[in-house]
Image (cartoon, rainbow, N blue to C red; front, side, top):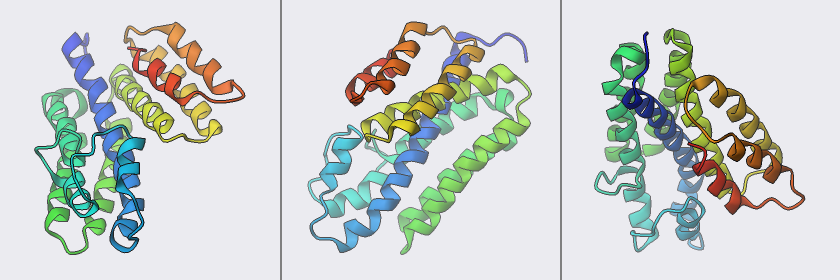
Length: 220
């Protein structure tokens, strides 16, 4: 493709971020699902605090039902998935119809999960479709810049979420190294000092996760 416009760049970046947000938060929710049903002591508010979303649910049963599926809640999984889809539709020419189709399939499976007696089966298909989306994007998108912008958004979102979750040092080092490589190839204007600061922060004896979130959000 030719020159990428500012609007296209922004949409590609957020397509990467939203698809990663759906993937990671859905995996976290999947781990919590059985606890929400079986463990009376499980505190869903810890989940909300860890990923920095407001507790608008009131009780864990409402959280279990609404967090994945409430389209009126901007922090729900389905809302983030639809934002990914909205960007992907506009980018059909850049990413291709087959790549877009996996985001469409993910929405289809989320809607099936909402009415299913065993929602985690369909939710696993959503996870599989997001993975397929990334794989097909790698295989089908000819423009390296387009792929790199999507992956830059994906890595920034992943570092943000992993830092909020207090992930292991080695996991963060790997993701920051991947971001540093990818963002330099993306053509996006970014703050190199922030990337260098991330590398320093993750090597400190005691990791300041809050600072990592601040720095990664200020890169673009």
